[in-house]
Figure 1 (cartoon, rainbow, N blue to C red):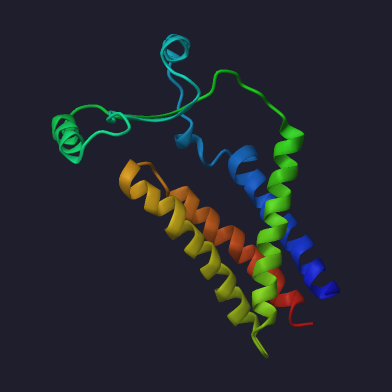
Figure 2 (cartoon, rainbow, N blue to C red):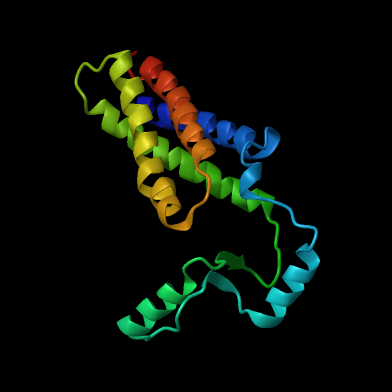
Length: 178
């Protein structure tokens, strides 16, 4: 149990630090947070016209028939579309958000280490490849699958998965084989 907890604590810290570097210090995801000089006008318009929530535009009202949905999609081909995550008020609780992120990273690596400990006589390379595979599986089944439909860039998310779970895999390959 001690080996598992230490594996998860250190591995979770590695993952957390990499995420901070990628999203914060190095700003590798800047293309996911573009700036517009019209942001005040856009935000004011959204505030006057939307309730808090997630929007895909154009969309049909809930309860629309399949025929109405198909007609709306046909009419939308070749026209602008958008996704909007809209909140009425920005709250910034960095401490709570970082604690939640750290807890999730710890839990993710705890689960990964637990699975890896079930592999008898695993080699360093087996642990490393399994760790990277988990990162790639997460990327493919969440970020990449959403990007197929909603057309947003994901190359840095793939890099994040490979690098962060590669670093975690190096740690786990070292620690779990002791």
